[in-house]
Image (cartoon, rainbow, N blue to C red; front, top):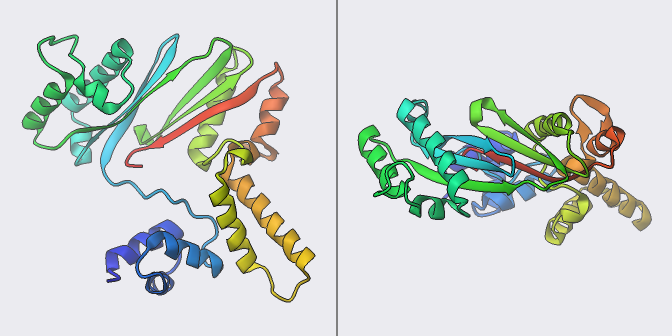
Length: 277
């Protein structure tokens, strides 16, 4: 059954009109990812992220130390609770516990004993907070980024903690300002991969199929192939961080920006996390 909420979700993810969204869902038996591909083949939707929009409320905080950066997403049911002082304190305390215990997942973090209340686990403290606040509270993401010795790191928190981005520049220290500039770019432009070689083969084949379906059928095969390659290049330029035009200076790519900085720097890692995704 094609519901109004399903049509609305497809419209939010593609920017295409309601009637077209309904048609696409009917053609694909309600499969929203297949409907996105259908719309793209029709030329109605150009570049669409597969990630859903936010599904819950929360914030992403981080703690940077000399040897590592800790990233923690804590969620609740409403923004009202997210801005609550108790919620904020628990979030900050959990980051401190991450620094001390170096857990590898949200579950392993919650199973740790509290260093403040040694008789209780962090999960027990979470449940106590739930009983006080009256809303469910979930640790949905706990990431530890170990710092390499000869590298620079930049972290950027966007939209009051709804989006957090981290960039690693290998090949030298002292380039933290540049790394943060690129992290700001990542927040705005939402790259999915670092370089074209990182794009999975199945994704490339799907993009090739879409490009082929959009190519004029009356052209010679060699012209069609050039059109397909051009569309693939456009996809890589949009999806891969190093290929993207720098948001503050579209005359250069991110790869150009790093190269201009010199010092033997190389962009080797980025992370972009968003509440609910």
